Image (cartoon, rainbow over all chains, first blue to last red; front, side, top):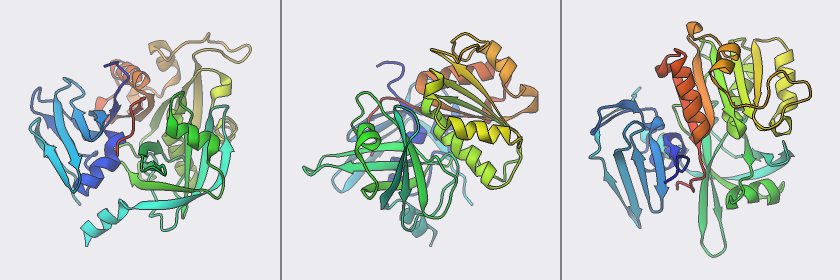
Length: 88
Length: 252
């Protein structure tokens, strides 16, 4: 995988919004592997249909895996310790 | 109910192309009219969906270039060598044609007129687009918040919005611009072609001591390198926001 073959969480904002119904790119996420805390927008996104993988920008550990099939969506969040959302 | 509003924002809109404006040899601005568009913040983007007759769809994310203004959305698209979507948007789509968009999305890489701190913008190539939305939003609000733009481009011909940037800088409203040319410079340019480096930053950027909010946008390698240079020069990493785009396919 070349250095430039990923984008960041900003680019996944539409897809994430369609799954969670709120914008989580502005939320802080803690990586369960290395403990780094950073906005979801800073994570690395490798998009492969039909799934999305968000990885920690520091250690590359998968934070969030989302796979979509007809009529259902699977979310694997075991790489996240927590997600801190800004709520009004 | 709030949830309804949020879900409503995610609907696909059918926009109509009002105008196409060639910005450089490879970049074109599409002016769209989007009925019921809710408005947007500078730095946000939209997903564009193209659908072929056989059911094949492709989705790509593009930054919004204009300040929010009623139902108008402007996207500036740079043609990628093997970009099926960008080729269509730059070369083929014409005024009157429909275009499906979803958005606005992205709540992190945004600048709002209420932000009062000085702003350091760093653009690589077509990474200028969301930063231009910030420059235009600031101007539309009549503000003089200090804005400094460092813009790295291959050659003078590759500068997107060249005339408008020159005009806005010459208006003396607190926007200043420094260019870094990486392949070819204008005649008599003092700096040979080179990427943004530590020396250029210390000379051209707002000082770290002014604690500016930094927005960096460009190709992945450019953003990584510029963010690392700013951090090494003592800028607060918490105030550095980045948006990178790469050759990765669409995220639908």
